[in-house]
Structures are given as structure tokens and as C-alpha cells.
Amino acid sequence: MANEAQGRGEGAGFASSSLELSTSLERSVQTRIFKIIVIGDSNVGKTCLTFRFTGGAFPAKTEATIGVDFREKAVEIEGERIKVQVWDTAGQERFRKSMVEHYYRNVHAVVFVYDVTKMASFENLKTWIQECNGHRVSASVPRVLVGNKCDLVNQIQVPSNMALKFADAHNMLLFETSAKDPKESQNVDSIFMCLACRLKAQKSLIYRNVEREDGRPHGYINGFVVVYGRDGERYLPGPHCDRAAGRSEQRGLRRLPGGAEQHTEAEQAEILHRTGAEVSVLYFLRLYPDIKIEGENYPPKLINKYLANFISYFKLLAIALIVTGQNPFQMLGTNTPRVWSWGQENKIFSCLMMFFLSNMLETQFLSTGAFEITLNDVPIWSKLQSGEREVSGAVSLDIETVDCGLMKACTANSLLWV
Ligand SMILES: Nc1nc2c(ncn2[C@@H]2O[C@H](COP(=O)(O)OP(=O)(O)OP(=O)(O)O)[C@@H](O)[C@H]2O)c(=O)[nH]1
Image 1 (cartoon, rainbow, N blue to C red):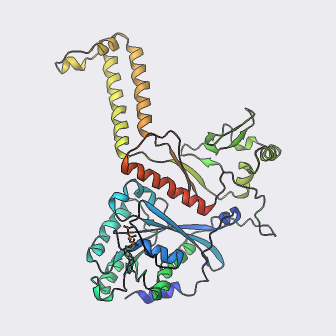
Image 2: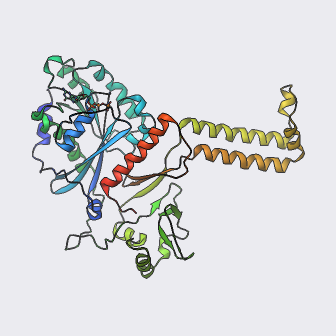
């Protein structure tokens, strides 16, 4: 346990941590959230470590993690309440699949875990580091190395000095610990608290303190947010009130034509009155201008991207051939189908048809029907549209995992949401 003292030292002296999860908006708004991912081979004890930290116990039974599991713990460091959101990732390749992008997106710190009784899990760390680097995780994102299962003293295969050398070479702190041994629980806490402390020192305060004297934020009514799309436009999540059309829309995202500023405060109050407990976008943004809320489409499968690209090139080629009057079938020495001859005779119509049909196909391939919303880079909400195309077996499992994972995050954050 070469570096244990160091780990313990950093972990000691923190104010007491609390398991209580915040469920109110005012707390969510004021609490910073740090996303820490835990990665490493399957069976090294990632789930047990995260459970020990967030739940304070060793789980009686664990199963292989599928996709990702979120666990959260609210801690207090130097008087500031911080939410540590631990992403317990799947070690098995088949359960990672399309989730990997999500693991690394907007991550604040990374915990690499190996099993001290399994040399292979230590040797595989190189692959995990490569994967992490491959996802453009910045060098400024703190990383720590954790050797787990130190309670199995007679089976240790990875000597401490070897692990320490590796940790040094990769600019990481090393913790050797055991999720199982209750005597080591403080050391497990130290891993995450050490990271939280580093992050606290690193990050500027994201949320402004908007507390009133009675402890509630000014103007807090209930949830309603505006979403900034990748296209720079602003979208309003439903249900919301469309004054121009004089109707209230249901769930979904609607582009704000002229911006939320179109609503005066009196109008906002009316919307509030008519729709129950929704706070105006304008009002909300004025209160919390530092909050960055973004929406993004859930990326399609790689194969779908390739297919859509292929269709797009095929469309361009076909249109070019039609316009220039070339006959690819003649070039290939085969019979010209009637549809091609017809296309040559009706060039404008066939080009338009080709254009719209292939665009439709491209959209089909690229659309996943899922939309993910992040608040200050932390995923808070994701939705699969109804009518999603049927997906089979493992893929379906992945998408469900993504969705329910993010929904879990949403519940934990209890955010400004309908
Ligand atoms: N002796 C001992 N066993 C441990 C310890 N931590 C985890 N285990 C056991 O190791 C096995 C795997 O633990 P998990 O936490 O599920 O492993 P994981 O890395 O999350 O595995 P995946 O979800 O497949 O990636 C379980 O049987 C645990 O009981 C430890 O500190 N000591």
C-alpha cells in the first residue's frame, strides 16, 4: 500500500459527508455536480467501490454492470455542498458498446481500477488509458489509480512498487484498498473525496448563490428550462404555452421563433397562471444566467452513419449521371432498366425524386429518436420518442440503458423539468 498514506492524508480532514440526495430545485441549482467515471476490467470491483463510497457498505451480491450505473453522494467540502456523481461503467465489452461516448463526455475525473490479485487487470490498464485518451479527455482532468481487493493478502500478484511506478509514469495518485474490508472504507472515501477536493479547487463556481433570506432562491417556482440546440437556436421543452397560437403544446421541443424575450413579465405570469407551476424561461435565465443547458441528439449507430453517407454519395452520383445523360448500365454492359430510361426522359422529375427519397432515407438512418439534455455538462434528461424504430437484442438493451441511466440521473438531480 505504497501510496496509501498519501491517499488517506488527502482524504482526512474533510467535513462530514452526507448520503442525503437533494430533491429540490433550489439545492440542485446551488450544488455543483462532479462527474467521476470509474473504469477498468470486468470483476475488478468497480461496482463495489462506488457502492462502498455512496452507500457506505459492501454489496452482498453484484452482477455485471450493463451500460452504466449512476450513484451519487452529496458531500460538504470547506462549507460548500458538492454532489459527487459516480458513473460505474461496465467492464465487459459487450455491455459497453454505444455507451462509451457517454462515459467520457464532460467527465470531470477518471478512476482507473485494477484487481491486485489479477495481473491481467493491471496490464490492461494501458488499454483503458488509451481508450480514455482516445475520447479526448483533457490532460487537466484528474486521474487516479486504484488497486482493489487488498484484503486478499495471500493472493496479491501486483506488487505495490510496480503499481506506484505505473501511477507515477501516468501522473496519477495510487490508492491500494479494499471495497470489502470495512477497515478500508475511509480509504475508499478518500479516493473520491481527494478528487472532489481537486475539482473544487480547479473549477470556478458555476452556480450563483441566489438564496433569499429565508433560504429559498429568488423567484423559484418550479421547473422550466430553455434548451440551446447545436444549431445555436433556442428550444423550449414542452408542455408550454404558445401565445401566438393561443394553445398549450404538449411535450417536445419547439424552436423559439423570436426568442423568449418576446414574453413580457406580465405574459410570463399569465403563462404561469394558465399552465400551473411553470417558471418562465426569461425569468429563469435572468435568475441563473450562468447555467448552461444544452440539448443534443443521441448519436446513431456507426453502421447507420456509414449507410447514410453511402446513400448521400449515391444520390449525388445518380443525379450527376442523370443530368449529364450518362448510362452506367451501358458502361457495365448490362441491359438498361426501364426506370433508368424513364429517368433520362424526365430528368427534372427524376432528380427531384432521387433527392427527396434519399434525403428521407438518410434521415431515417441518422435519427435515433433520442434527445439528451445536459445542465452544466451533466446529463439530466434523455428521451426516446414514441414510435422509435424497433431495434433488436443487444442494441435495444443499450438504448434502454442509456435512457434509463439518464433518467436516473434526472431523478437524482430532480431538475427543473416537467
Ligand atoms: N475480496 C474482495 N472481493 C471483492 C472486492 N471488491 C469486489 N469484490 C468482488 O469482486 C466481484 C466483482 O465485483 P464488481 O464490483 O461487480 O466488479 P465490476 O468491476 O463492477 O465488474 P463489471 O460490472 O463486470 O465491470 C464480486 O464478486 C465482488 O464481491 C474486494 O475489495 N475484496
